Length: 267
Image (cartoon, rainbow, N blue to C red):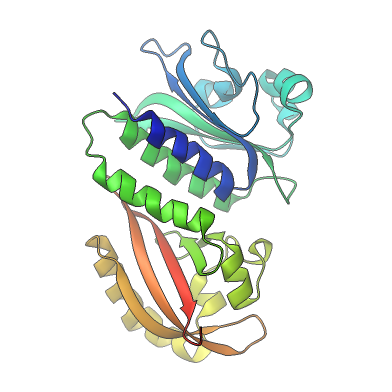
């Protein structure tokens, strides 16, 4: 049986990482016409009932990632938004197993911004893959628990700078520790290139030719990588940091995300 505790943690951590007020994960029944299991985070009454597809109905009808600035733009969600949840922004991604639709993961009411970003969608897709691995009862849970630890660190760490990046080093998550260390708010950096933002100009060519290929190779091998380097702050100053990079790995997709923990060498 799927580990409900892990699935619940995925929803809770995801809700925090994408700065949503509500989150829900739903698993379809064998016929695919109703949800047989629903897990939620935040105060989200009546997200679904056993006889309905609820707030996941748009991506069950058309299984692709969906972001809406106002849920009333989708007629199937209008009643939920105005009467029950009083939410506007909406993000949902489908859960697939071997190309078969198995359910969905959704988040509502983006906090601190009018709508969810592309970076939030990328994070949600990664969490959906993790949830799907959990739903496969034959899957070894060790890698799932390790990936959850990385996500939990990004969600809960208050002092160290924790950054979640795509394999191409697009910044997807930026915690308060990163804001304090580098001077940028999350709103300023999400979706930007890690290389262009934080690597000093004089070091970018060497980083692209030598450092990045070596790090990418070690991350593909499932290794956690430690190194010291120089980083660029918003005010233009350089800062010596100790970095720990860890891969969030998927059996089919390879390295899915990279979490980077940065600590000032002066601390």
